[in-house]
Amino acid sequence: ISVGDGALDVPSPQLTRIGKIVEKYILSTSKIENVSVKQYVIMPNHIHLIILIKPTINEYIDDLNNLGTSKAPSPTNEMIPHIVSTFKRFCNKEIGENIFQRTYYDHIIRDKEDYQTRAKYIYENPKRWFYDELYKE
Image (cartoon, rainbow, N blue to C red; front, side, top):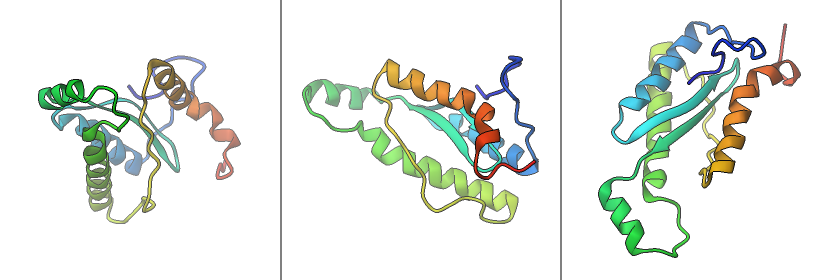
């Protein structure tokens, strides 16, 4: 779900040609098996995404067999870097130049409260654009 869903109090970013390309590849991420984009926002100088990676049955069984371990889910360790690098590569190729910084910030959401906090941040991000240090009228 993108920001700007018709609510009157939430600004709806107007996507440029580059923004539309970025959105196309965000949406195509859901074509990857066991991956879905739950929420996103495309801002003038950055994007936010919540990506859900569903465990396979074998990973689920492995987790049940290893109760008590405090490790990140294995699909996250492998999938997120692959998804991000592929996303950036496809966007850059279609745009014709590199528009992304080399690194990115990721966070594993571990519970409902964490999810709600991050989803709210993404939803309200357009409201805060005016206060961004890179904002220009």
